[in-house]
Image (cartoon, rainbow, N blue to C red):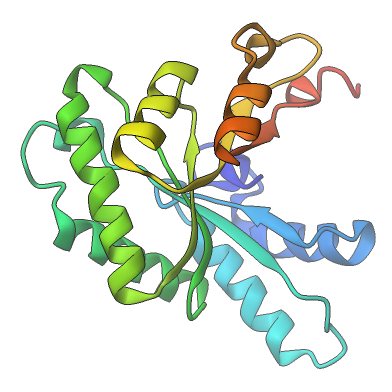
Amino acid sequence: GGWQLSAGHSQRAGSAKDCMAHAADQHGLTTFDCGDIYTGVEEAIGAFVRSRCSNTSSSTPLQIHTKFVPDLEELPTGRVNREMVRAVVHRSCARLGLPALDLVQFHWWDYSLWNECQQTARHLMAVQSEDGLIRHLGLTNFDMEHACMLIEDCGFPAVSIQVQYSVLDRRPEKDDMAARLSERHGCHLLCYGALAGGFLSD
């Protein structure tokens, strides 16, 4: 996960590239998560990816997950249109230095604007189909009800949903989220906060 390396969240933001190199070289991590709204993190991962590509001894393929999270104040304006979605996807590719994005995870802040959410999901699907820059689509921090609605009503092809889950936060179990989404729709849980922000490892 990369949000804690974003500017304003960590004193280590300036050394994000070195943190990722350490995670890969010393601990064998090959998958990194970031987001278009995590200030500076896509750029840092991009620098890391480019350094790995230029190092012929680093042959292990990397997988980069990012997000599409439109600003809350933009949601009711009509400006979250297909061209805006396309521009953000192209920007993420440029920041990360990748020809295509392995996984783009969609988040929506306000369920009272559900029609707009559905339309934005359709824009993401269209950009995936038309531009070929998104390998997989997913969801992040959707509740069970709205995740199912988006998948069933819009045909949103989510391969994963990112949710918080640990022995202290077991909300996904209450909704039977894994069984309902995975078995019914092939949408698997990507869990963060498994160590409760380090609380369980200290």
